[in-house]
Image (cartoon, rainbow, N blue to C red; front, side, top):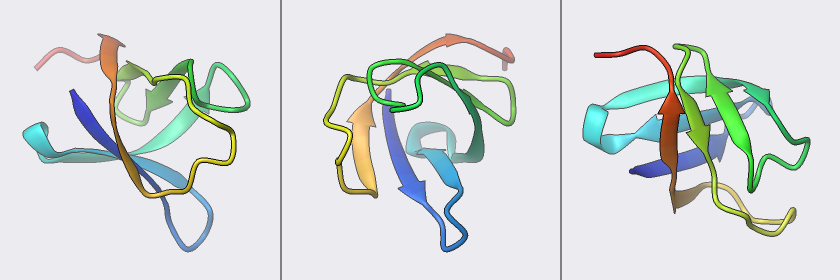
Length: 72
């Protein structure tokens, strides 16, 4: 699924899923670099992000895979 990752003015990372019209803060990352690992959203969803360079400029839209979380 397409996911936009951005950083707000306070430095907090958020994920926006346009297909679901869902915007949630990223509350945990399996890897300090975020890219190529799992991130957990505030609603419990876990997304697997693609491997990318650590200096990737935000905001960016990526293809992520949902691996666990709250069912709809």
